[in-house]
Length: 539
Image (cartoon, rainbow, N blue to C red; front, top):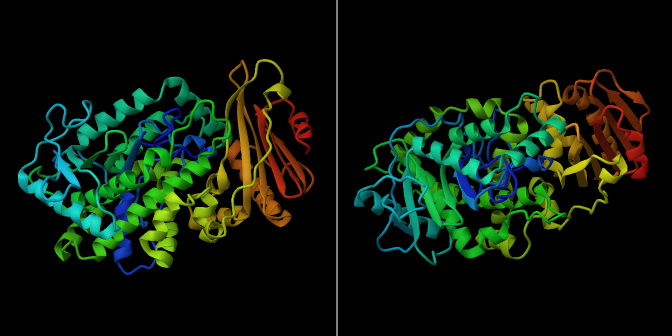
């Protein structure tokens, strides 16, 4: 359900489609890392991440809040990946609300082939991306950063990268246009239905509006993997490249290096309509590598003395003045999904970097890409190549009878499962709730869900999960028994036994069944027949 992949043009996944973005959160991550922390700090507020049920969440590379060591990204929201771009957003402890001040469009030309500067004239950038002209002095600054990035990331640009600056106001218009262009209304409506039937979002939730507002608030730069151009958002004097613009440029130039050496479009492909084995969870895991890599590069770049103390103080001041109102109030599946690639992605990348330097990180692209958010959350699972088990979930539309259609078949993963449990907890934004939900899903082994809809527009879901042991299946079952009350507006402890419980509200039947290491979750229109579905699946 986590839609964090901006590259999945066929779905709306809660991200700036096709872009590798830098969010305000990334800024907070880097700043906290420079403050002597061995690992990124945890955001004080619930942040977005991809969902795999969250299948509707995000895949774009974006770092959000500021306090956190800075994302995905998770990720757990859905990423409606739309164009093949990767956006990087840096988020300070608060997240800054972008103003509409003029931004400079700057690109570096000069000695290094790493960056060139767009002038804002026709043909220099994509026709629908407005940019601002900048003086040669600004180009020289970006040119210097490109050299620094090569040294920091231990890779050398193969071809020049056109770097452009744009205003916040223009970014807002651009993101709105791109979202509309790449996400047909029927796709947005479908993903919104899936978010709601899982309980990730309330019934009155407007997915498109919230997602766009979130991007407008958080994104401070992006690299487009289709056009191979980099864009930095700034609201200061176009003739100057301030510390925030420099910070953003380093992150996005790292994405450009990733693209030139590891082909990001191929590494993190878009979902094809005929792909019935697609996993939003796996897509989110790859995004976490991309963003975590870029954040690690930023940490190394700053620790390498590339900003003066005065510039660091100005960067910190920028982070403290940022606004994160949309982020703070977004459903966890979006906020946590957005942050996951930056925060947890960096912890994962650091585990590789500490053992084998950049060579070990590079091999995660070329030799063995991460397969699940579980591998990102538990690097030891990646090291031991513990991969998700294959879950058998035949389509249930035939069992339900005529008039039913499938909305999506997908994998949620550990991250989305955790966000699902946490969303249903009374104090869901508290760190204690996140910790409790994390413990309940740490034994995730695999899952598969199908969301369905009947001719009357009623939506349901069947979610089959498997856990490493019966004890861990019980942990999830018990935690889910508590969360469903808030997720679906039901009361009581449910009818049934320690292995099977059911609830009903005015419109839905909710069922949880544990069998061995498996737990089956069903949310179907009232009277549809949860027992019939369960029996057909061997529960």
